[in-house]
Image (tube, rainbow, N blue to C red; front, side):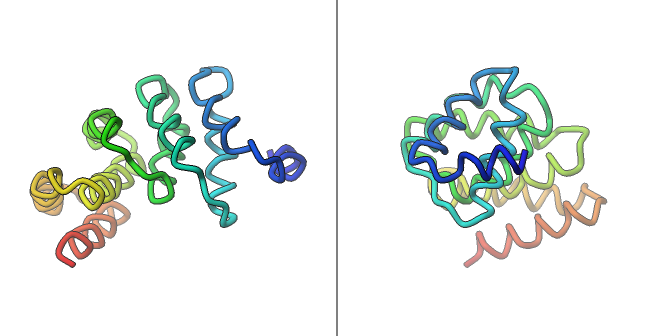
Length: 152
């Protein structure tokens, strides 16, 4: 994967290609990993490419792909046209059996609430409830940080 990344990351349409590949079940795991790696390496994603990512949310079938998108949401602005799709995605994943998916879904709710005020009260309530129910340390840390961010 790193060789694929190194060979292609300089292309001006690299993130666009990866965003488009999220809609293809055979390619979405690799594309989401490459996109996350690209962002982790300090590259920005164009607003239009972020929206293409959000258009594919209902088609993300593998938990690793879902996790990669959750972990990159901080770099993917959510426009008004996609906020409902993001909300559905987060609502579904916050009940996942996978601890990391739940942890990053709580963070996703904070990101959504910070970009769209109408979700702030719901995110606050969700995190307060989860604070009492969740036992995994990785989730508790995300909840605590999220509550701090929402209070700021």
